[in-house]
Image (cartoon, rainbow, N blue to C red; front, side, top):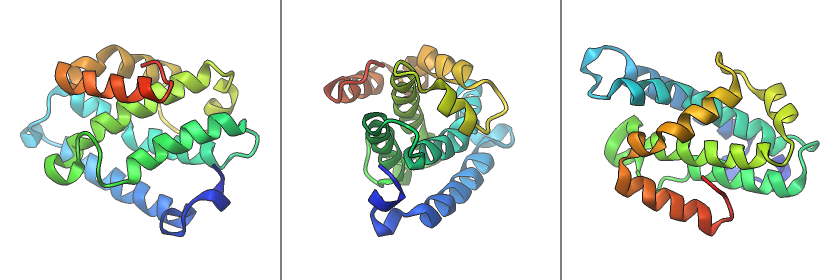
Length: 163
């Protein structure tokens, strides 16, 4: 997927706007003790905007192999489409947890395809990307709950991604 392949309604300018809105929603949901989120979920949500922008940068990078860009583009679309396994419209920013788990699984799969140099070049998070992906994979069951995580695993496996 490249910028030319994105539908007009989710082109590069819209992706940046989505990132800004996402950053604001996630930040406001994790500030203060009354957020209602567990500590681990709050910490995971703080990396969601950085993961989102990484997916966008990788999907638009013509140096990334096309098969990997398609896989990454699919994870990016999962972020922006309003209907998914844990819809943000119903559960608020915590609904980005399934997006995060799916994105990290896809990035882990992409790392298996020697994309680490591409990903690190585009990564803007404060923690090392490989550590973030490992931590999300390790805690995915706790972040989503066993039932939802099972659905996410099946969703990924049907698309050839090993969570």
